[in-house]
Length: 434
Image (tube, rainbow, N blue to C red; front, side, top):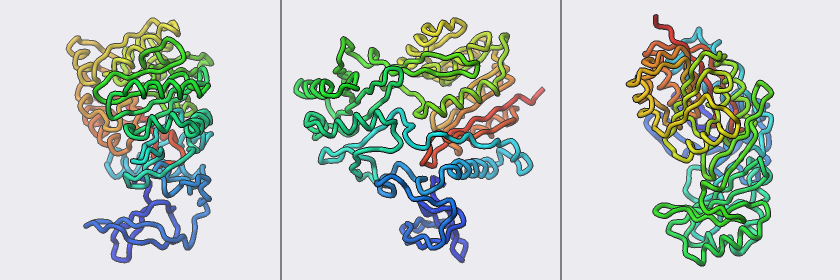
């Protein structure tokens, strides 16, 4: 449950404890008692699990980011798979005799140094770090073992620059660093609580000039347009591109870009594993039409378009659609159409127009997509592939899809976020009603 270990007292009361493993005997201190459970903190491990390891990060247990560093890398994926299975069984998405539908987990090769994007918070003294475990307090850090080396290098250089501290000292709440693997550059975002002044724009320019790997420093916030300070003529986030090469199962490669600040999977290695699995499960023919209701910059839409007759992508974010269209053009993929609409408005309009699809891809945000599910069957889609980062909302939505006549064929968990309890899950469903 949320990365906690679960134990029971003699009276049966559930106790949730972070940083413990199944089968361990531990000494804990009670922190908060609820009606049906209590939370506790770990004092000592009396009998450790054989899968317990020493966390390599000096901030572990104080920083709230990683909660699995005490677990052997191989066992992390197995435990996540067990958590996923428990969700699906408890919610009755799967019956006991359907456990075989959950495949072996997609384990990560790189357990550290995989994040392409990282965000730091800034405390009241202008010191950057991560939120402490279940707290709004900030744990100052100088590095993060989950980040790709290029991000740690730039962050370390920022910490050596007076202009960086002067920028974040009073009016900044967060800092983000985003890595562009196509040119090995980094974009730095400074989140401001008010419109930046000319003096702060000059500080951003000074910072950008001191950091050779940084292509742009972008000052962002609510109520004003982003201010871009870059080495070239780029003057808006739309002109600052993050890029990567995406290998495909066919040995082809896509050249992908998205606008700075846009969304992409943080783990490129596991993104490739997701695409490989998607293409195998989709098994598309040149006569089939596919619909991607949360398409982003075309991460999944374009690989499917390479095999299908036609692909349609919808996304609410204008910058994502701009990027998807450009990516299709750059990769000479012409059998696709992208449109800026929410998933709900998009599928409603498609149903009204009488459009039909063979496969629908759902990759919603954490809250899921229960609102669009009643419309999917009206597209006559025989297959659905659902990608989720939250087992709870996934279970809820799978139950709704079952009510619409779809049955679950395959489930696979991908360890997209090693050293944390978070996971990515792919589910294939088929229409069973006749």
